[in-house]
Image (tube, rainbow, N blue to C red; front, side, top):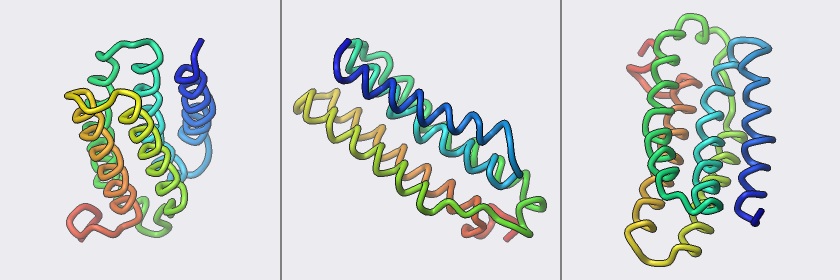
Length: 150
């Protein structure tokens, strides 16, 4: 077992475990935030596993997850507009913490792989992950016209 696998275990075990608990229990506003954060935490976990096991295919899975995860959150935001209108979710701190984790993982992995096509793919995954989850979180809180009843 190497350091990458330990980091992946911490991210996946702690973060994704907490988001699964959040999705399974509590009010609707906590459930949609937890669903959005599950992508933001599972994607860096997959990137760490890819480096730990030396399996570049896991980076492709992270790329797909970074692309489709926020899209799913936007669909939930649109479908649950009426239910979330009275008490919209607020997760600014958690969203930025997850974005910081994603950025830290991407920077560490870029330093490990060096300049290459793999580094370009990591940077793309990081940009999609951070940008997508920030936009999806903003949509959940009612901040994007046309996505939530605007």
